[in-house]
Image 1 (tube, rainbow, N blue to C red):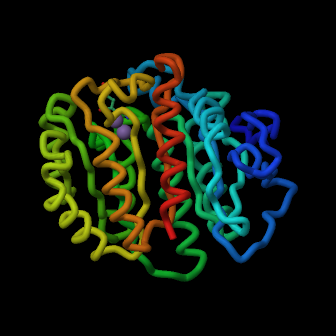
Image 2: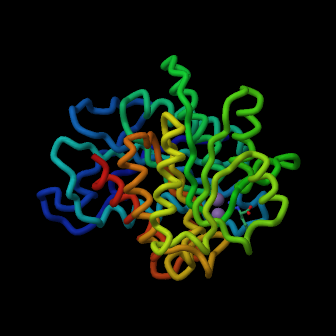
Image 3: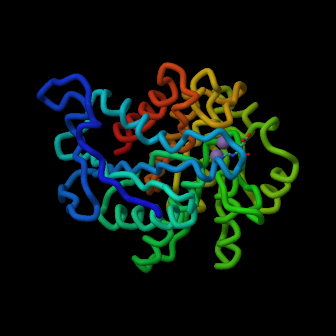
Length: 323
Ligand SMILES: N=CN[C@@H](CCC(=O)O)C(=O)O
Ligand SMILES: [Mn+2]
Ligand SMILES: [Mn+2]
């Protein structure tokens, strides 16, 4: 059975200023089952954990990502708060996968994402295996459907991998975007998916063929750096133009293992944080980003909390640089 757990505010600790100089002093922990999200006239950011490595296990990866959300929160808590007084930073709890039922956990995640969007918050999901993306995407899709909006969602994935493996055997951390593509086919809607940072040495030719068949836009890791920024910028702008909303997903294993050793499938030849920040600026400037997640944080393999700190800094960047 999946469980939803409210986060104990004591988990959010750090240097004390008494003046909300740090995020642990700004955050409000909410139990979505019993508490209302405070209404304000500023931006509300809702952190939600996906404590699940069942998909990684099924995909023959190294388990440990279930503790990812906890590790990222710990680092985020200590960072400085530059948010305006009327902005809200909420910790809306964690969805766990305790009995290995991935589908149920993804469904629970999807419902929670819909609930967060319905309450006018911007969800920031912390994982957990990249199977999180299937639940996350469906939560956005269901929210838009409930609103009666016939709107398109484009997915931008920063990743070393396409995650377009067929789910014939099972659903896992390597199949989420294939599953979304299959659903799009059934619903006769367009599958809009862009991958940034694809590693030739981490994707087999079947995956490249699938990406081609599905019309996936991608930038290979060799060209995913600031030297190629003008072209990358143009590619993102073209992609953004064709969709109504953008769901952004960052798989930490796309970063070089020099920055992100704490993942299941590390990338010694991965990309650097600078190019990701520049791309995030473009995505945020489009005003179409509806939701974000950071996937594959695995504290078991982290060194000196570098990966958790990187993930926390990415969240810090997004909440402080979108207006
Ligand atoms: N979400 C990760 N997916 C990768 C994992 C690769 C690996 O374990 O080496 C994939 O299936 O390709
Ligand atoms: Mn990956
Ligand atoms: Mn991935």
